[in-house]
Length: 196
Image (tube, rainbow, N blue to C red; front, side):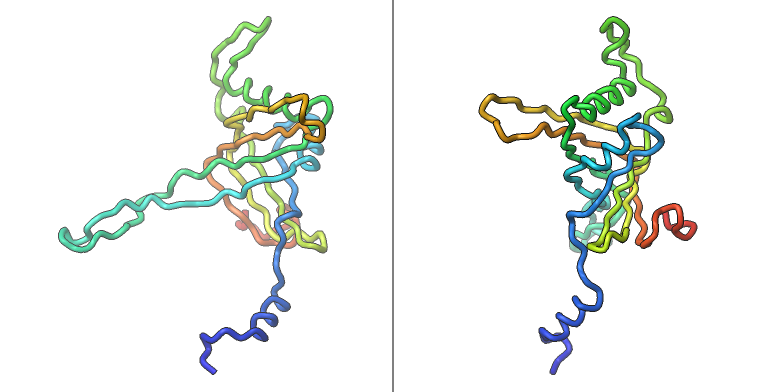
């Protein structure tokens, strides 16, 4: 039988050997106290997150002047924003923490509600964000780190008397300079040097 012919037994054997990873078991860590006293709440109440992708800048060019058009990678593209949705508490603690973080970056409110319009130094407002992904046994299978992250936008929250069963969701988009990952089963601190 040709090797490129689909074989259900080979497929089942591969799945049985290496398994699959579901997308519903993860935790979020925002580094160095950026979220203040609600760091545990941030991790427990993160409902969804999109893992950052990657793209290359590859403009179309004619390599030999008159050759067919080809795409030639020239640089790394911009890293996409990462959006995290949180189920907030009854004090809207996460919403307030993100609002205050953004106000720290660019002081659009100040003492006595007088805007300062002052931009903070980058080192003072960026934090690494870690996204830990777990398997069904609770073992960490991969961790994605968004480097030098900061909140870019705090989404609107829609309120309506007709929304009897809806929860307050705080949706935040974060920008970062780069992302990397490891595939260690152990936590980041115990991974081999250079994996993060």
